[in-house]
Image (cartoon, rainbow, N blue to C red; front, side, top):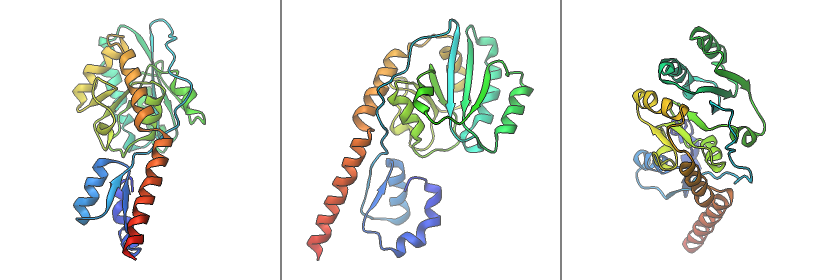
Length: 246
């Protein structure tokens, strides 16, 4: 189970099936399940992503910082909170920036209207969904995840696998992956956004070390191979336990 908000919808079905073992996709979800159901046999296995051969490029357009967002355009993803912040930091910016939004969703019209209202059309663009996300991610200098809530977002793992630093609200299991200012950036408040974004856009923070640490972490702990191995090992362990009980 990944989304704690969906657990209640599946309670009757899962319990009726007499589940012998639970697997969660994060530590925080594991803790939630234990809090809801008391002692259950459970372990967590993080989702894995393919480790791409391509990595973030350092080729830049002079004086322009390239920022990205990838995700469903809905309230959960928090773009309606981020876009006004981009307007507020304008007086602090030396460099120009281009904020590219990849995705579709029910909030798109509202977000376009907000960008137009705040006169941000020159620096915020919506390019719709893309099939090859990695080829888009490597174009950016950093990725923003201003979500109101999350589980463990795959786009965060995919970005870090490409060496792309991620700036994310401290929601869901994000803190289990990102170590603030080491392999990415954790945001705890609006003031954190207002403080950090001008520094990143103006190039005042060296992202090279963060990029390397992000890639190394995903390669060692969040690969598809590691995930598959852990599922196989978990199945074999609990199969052996079940057989000894028979």
